[in-house]
Image 1 (spheres, one colour):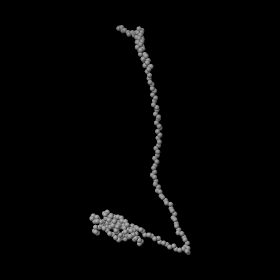
Image 2: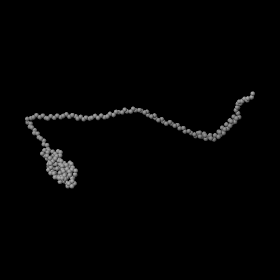
Image 3: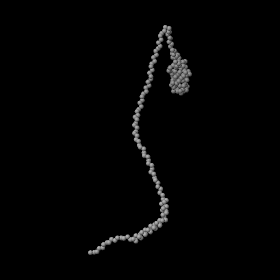
Amino acid sequence: MPSASLAVVRRVHPDKVRIAALSVAITLNLTALLFALRPLAPQIAHVIDTASVDVRIIEPPPKAPPPPDIVVKPLPKPVPVTAPVHVPVVHVQPAVPPVITTPPTTEPSQNSKPVPTTTPVVAPPSIAPGVTSLAYRSSPLRFPAQGIRARMEGTVMLLVLVDENGKPLEVKIEQSSGYPLLDKSAREQVLSGWLFQPAVIDGHTVKAWARVPVSFALQQL
């Protein structure tokens, strides 16, 4: 039977010499580090002392006031518009009582005499109303020479105011003949040379307006 070797577990015991050597090395390193940092110690301390941190406290912004409450008001009711009513105004005149006049009653006396009644005399008007037609007493008429050369013809209607003696006082042209020359000639001739029978009212001669036609015709030359 072959022989087999069994593994034997060995416990590792700490090496005191090695531990001591590591401790010495660590101590030396720390001492060298302290000596290296010693010149920088005052500067590090000064930096720590002079370093200041400004701490500002930021206050929160003031809160905005809350919005006012919304008040809901009801809408006003529409007022109905009524059309104006026109009331007719009736003017009533006060009734005037009739005045009753009674003739005075006089008792007839024996000595009373009848009073004669007089008829009022009405004076005749100074001018006859309206326009009348008067008879001619004298009506000379000359045809203007310029009208003959220009072959003018026509009839002028005149309104003539005749006095109590039949003489023209005023002459107006009522209707033209179409030619100012004939109209002017007729007016001037009637006013200066014509005579009429005056108008008579209640036996008295009065003034009157008369309508007088004056004709200019070349055939009458």
